[in-house]
Image (cartoon, rainbow, N blue to C red; front, side, top):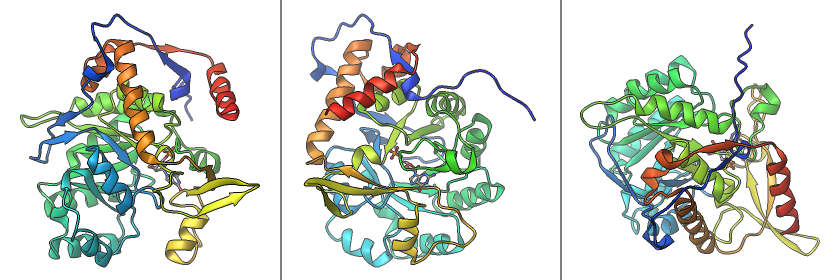
Length: 356
Ligand code: 5GP
């Protein structure tokens, strides 16, 4: 047994120190980025924010909206080939959609079928998504996926430490998805005791990924989960995340899937973890006997129209940029100085939520 005693940080443990800025207006801040990758020859341009591959927000409806803002939607795993065939009759914007799959035989068979049916070329991104990216077999699946899809931007995760981030990139992924346990409906930390404070995981894994370089590009990471406020998205970018993936921030809106529930006269929308009992029951008809649920079901107070929130999120990022003196999103990590704060900030934000 060993204890590592340097303190690891979550988003709520830090604030950003304001800095001198020469920007005239928030409008001048450039949020778009262009990325080149370690394996894929594609050059991607857009706002590097993704809707999580979850039943409520990884949907066709959200993709139609997000692609308009040059943001990405990672589809949930429950769509069938028929669903995709129908959707892609009217949607053709590969740069802003991501096909998600697990690593079971049935997932790989579906990937092969997607390729055979010409559907994979409708996506720039493919995400190999497992709760525990430390399984040795995961690296083999990544290697095979790279052989099968040499030009796609391959995302793989989830992990939280630097050595495995490097291994995953070297095995064939362009982007590593970072986060074990930070998700708002994730119960992994409670059920298993495993996890890593998310801001530190992002900072450490970004550092490793960016250190893996070739003549084409560098390794990239996604900060996945745990962003409770727009400020957390900004903090993840400041910590070196190339992309942010969010579930709860992009759920609870009119345009999300899931029931609208009325309780004591107030409107709510459903939001639930992909390994919650609810998801297993709804999509597989039963819960795996050997698996404990590591996700929960919750009702989010109805948040109205998602367009308004996206505008707010962009506005917040532009505002962060002006406070820290960054002219573009790309400069966030260079301009950022984090201040460690005590946990009173969390209490303050929770109180703010209650008052709202
Ligand atoms: P949020 O943005 O809601 O904080 O977190 C979204 C992320 O939580 C997802 O992208 C995914 O990585 C993770 N997640 C989603 N469902 C589950 C689940 O049932 N269990 C666990 N452990 N994580 C989940």
